[in-house]
Length: 416
Image 1: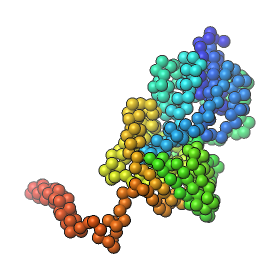
Image 2 (image 1 turned 60 degrees about the vertical axis):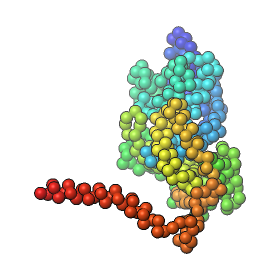
Image 3 (image 1 turned 30 degrees about the vertical axis):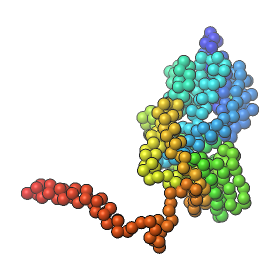
Image 4 (image 1 turned 135 degrees about the horizontal axis):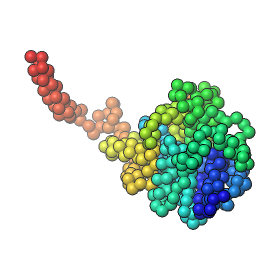
């Protein structure tokens, strides 16, 4: 055994990779504290605790961070209508800074100089974890085994990991591994790698776990009313059975259940990783999909047109920063403040139907609405003079007339 190098806090999942990393870190001379984040995934946390202790962890922290994940990370993304590359609702990208923040907190509590994680050297998560760690504790040192030649050359594939596990008494899965990797949290579950790396391959029927097949979903929709204050959902009511949820965590879990039952929230995309390569990912984001559509609707109903154009640009940048791991950057903090300020008037209730893989908006109401029914009505003139539109059109057509007049001159000259 190598000479003691000090204490390292390992972001531990309980799976094969981080279990092997735990034992390997001990071999390198570290005292290992294991930290397992409960962020809404299906996991036997007590079994994971016992496993980590049996493998030599000197202490195990199991931290329930589900509520703070919803209130401090998911809600700002809902306010932003955050969407990376037009499709991805950022489930993993939002979870990483939440997990890493607690990792740093535990390291400071334990007086540890080091933190470690099991993210690969090709993905986004290594960036997200480490940028958070360095932002919150600039002197922290990160051990990333999958970027260390002495580790990845020793374990070039899963077979070598399995052999190492058997040699060191690390329990290995008795059921066959799915031919893809999965990562779950309260907001979503992602599937990638293995047979999914060929983008032509359709997702096998048994892959999805958070949502049912829309074709087999109920033949009766669930009609929900979602109330927003400052762009944040504060209450959901099911008009069918009268069920209501008001606390952030309970509301989000309930929407996950309803959306999952109706097969809402599935996407299959190829995205651009921050490190410079394209990757194929399949995602299920049930509650997030409902809230995206609901918030988009109430925001359009209550927000000034020009403010919304600016806010859409901010949201685009916010989504990119979150995806790339810059949650704790000054620019991302600035954007969250700006977006939060834009949400002061985003108040009201959206009624929607969840049915067969889709979310259908049915109606909305708000005390801060900018919709004037009399002004827009085709049956009432209201405080609007139609004759004024003639001048409006003439002024706006001036630029177009001049452009095409000059273009026609250029075309004639070129033809001579």
